[in-house]
Amino acid sequence: MKHYPAYIKDNWLKKTFPLKPLDEHIHAAAQWLMHAQSQAADGGVPHCFDVKKKRWWPSYPETTGYIIPTLFDYGNEYKVASAIEAAIRMTQWESDIQLEDGGVMAGHMGAEVITPTIFNTGQVLFGWARAYEETHEQSFYESLRRASDWLVEAMDEDGAWRKYASPFAPGEVKVYNTRCAFGLARSYQVIGDHKYLEAAIKNIDWALTMAKPNGWLIKNCLTLNPQSLTHTIAYAMRGILEVGAFTENQNFIDFAIQMAQKMMVLQRDDGAFPGRVDEHWTSKHQWTCVTGNSQLAINFFRLFEITGNKEFLFSAVGANRFNRSIQDTETENSNIFGAMKGSHPINAEYISYRYPNWAAKFFIDALLLEKKLANSQ
Image: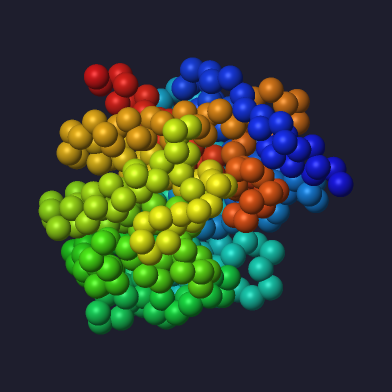
């Protein structure tokens, strides 16, 4: 029953927190990520802090992989050496646990079955790529190459990834694997092997065959629910957008713009988006996916950078403002201070009663982008 205060705070009291300067929100979330890492014995970042069970879950290879660039960004921006050291430890751990075939395991370190999976492998590419750029450590380069080769070999001829589906996300194929295509584009930037970029483009081409005329992507959720989470909508959009931007493919960019415009219509006055959206780009859900809010903000900031359309900028700032208002920087509980919930209210369906590490990661990324753009205006 110890989780009841969190339930009451969100559902009855409608508790929010005063907005602080961007830097303070960023520091709090980054310090929480490093605190989370300190709770694991292996160098990875725990999947989440569980409010109901008052415990940390085991380390999560997938999200630790893309937390690495975030901590490098934070450490470099604010000259925080401990953040860079934490990112390097995470990368070393990722290389230590990389599977023999080059893939990355599904699930967290407590998973009963150890099997490689496409999405998790694609996300760790971001960590290895950035860590190699920062350190020139050859083992990171080799891990990046092996994982990238594995992803290319696992791809079907039409550009889809059907093999090595996650046992924790039912369904043979997931369109949000476009974020793995984005990862392969990063691998190409570092290694220079054209097969990585060719595979990335092929996957985006395939993903767009899964689109309806209104820009809706089918088979684009963690579950078989036909209403997609904003989390996976944003994943798919980011992959399509970034591969489009990198290759100067206007068709890819235009599709991401179409998705973004549909989502912007659903944004509430307080800046949040509904947690799930249906194929008509409508939603009756009152809860919000906190991670999805930050991811959409990132996508909209990137679209503003690419197009100059200030509507994207205003939407992104609004989403950030909402998420800042629900970050608890008043509690004395170090397991919650600076963290971001899976859902708001905390009992809603996505990562209920938990503070997942990736929610803090994307929150930091979104605020760093807002800060960068504010300084450039």
